[in-house]
Image 1 (tube, rainbow, N blue to C red):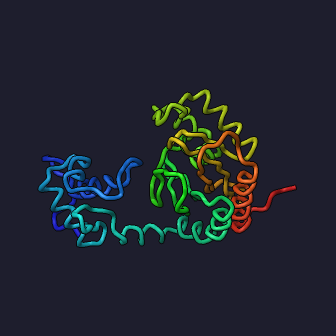
Image 2 (image 1 turned 30 degrees about the vertical axis):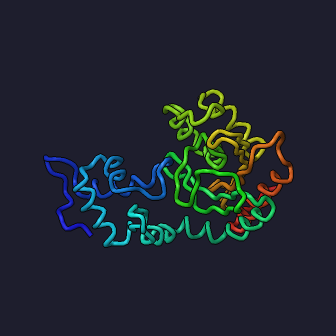
Image 3 (image 1 turned 45 degrees about the vertical axis):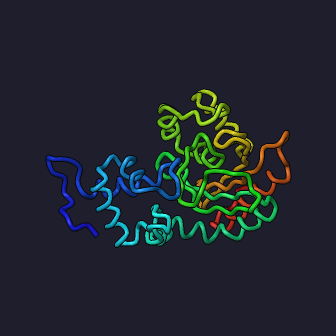
Length: 260
């Protein structure tokens, strides 16, 4: 795919790092699904001529596609590779029937996400035409402290990971976004106690979410399931039950058995 040597030299970043910088412009939480060449160059911090050449390389390989309006988006080749990873493929296949059942109850956004680095990586999303607008999409990475699935994953993460995460600056995305480490520790403890996370207008205005953990055979939390819906005056107990049921169904299929 790359015609130049990939080793770094004294004059600047390696070709490989510049190639990945181009792809990374599509993967930030706020990135649009399609970008102009100029926007890619600005986000990657590269000259326009260099960006044009690297984008052409990605297009030849299938990693980037040019749309009819001249903008660029991620190509299917990257998605095909991504879904072949055991975690993504197995979880999506096992979870899909339960996610579909959950969608039939809510008729809103239904999410499946895993912990990847310091973010929630979205493996699946089901949505209805009338669902509340949100920024999530399959393959997106969103902050743990500002999403329902992210809070569940953070609540059940290794304590050292949690402390490291809380020691970092946390983005205040909306007025209701909780960024205080002390408040988040209490919130995570509550999530572990009651078994679900509730989030009201902390990532997207007008939307709320309910999320629950998915456990594997060993009892380790490996994913989270959620529904996102228009914010109302109270929490819907039927939706909470539906989310819990979906998460338990996926967990049972993964081999989890609750000890008596």
